[in-house]
Image (cartoon, rainbow, N blue to C red; front, top):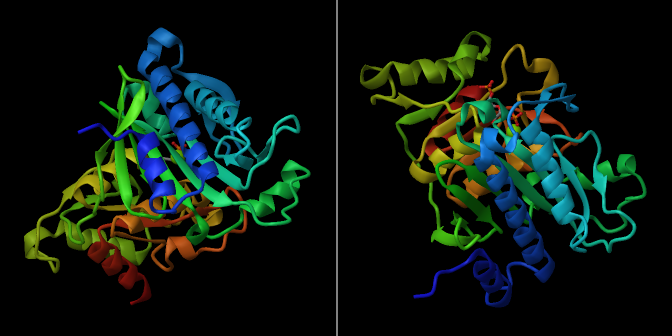
Length: 337
Ligand code: AHM
Ligand code: MG
């Protein structure tokens, strides 16, 4: 049987199921090609001169790596001329990037974390790209980057597509257009993504958790309680032994959960209070929450479903608890106990 390419999957979602429009199909194909280009740059590593610091800071005050800047440029260049987008926003840019006047404008908004897991770039550990697609509201003021920010401030439930590329031993593209979650593997010889997993499902129960334990003393009591209970193992109230994993690339940690279940937490803690959390809502938490829910899992801040948050700022941060449904519900319940 013929292999199903990403292009064929998208065509079927458009033509047979009517789930996506032609422009959304184009948008996702363009993003996938940008991810291929990023994958090639990452693969060259030290030979391509892409490792190390860029010598600049982003809006969050974080030092940018060369690959953060390069990946951002690849996504901007790939997407601005196709006519499918109204504007883009990124972790690496203070304000939205408008489509230049010389190109036609489309009806979609794209947000992305061009290179997630930046602390892992120089140590050759899995990193990724995360993206989210929204429709641009009618009458949105796109006359300046400042005025365009408002168009992006939509809850995660409004996303029409979300996905991530994970650059690991293989490069994968994991995607939802609101019709379940599918995974494609990059065939490097053919230069295209081929469908390798349909209908990804996160088991409701798990024995595996992912959290940065070095922040333990800063967590709120509900998270302290839950992690204490997991660590107590078979003799504790949860009655089973748990294992722990922490890659420190959200894409890699979430991909493991998409593959075999688990719970991921970057919860609120006392040193993150002022900034609202660690992870960014628009291009990290929301797309991952859509993918996780589409795969049968759950995603909350501990107090609220992530996809229901009404964003106030483009670079807003939120606490994130996501993965296997029963575990997410348990720790979310502890927040209101
Ligand atoms: P980045 O987008 O600048 O790479 O930061 C986000 C990353 C997530 O991928 C990961 O879950 C988290 O930061 C790791 O944080 P820590 O280094 O505190 O463990
Ligand atoms: Mg990130």
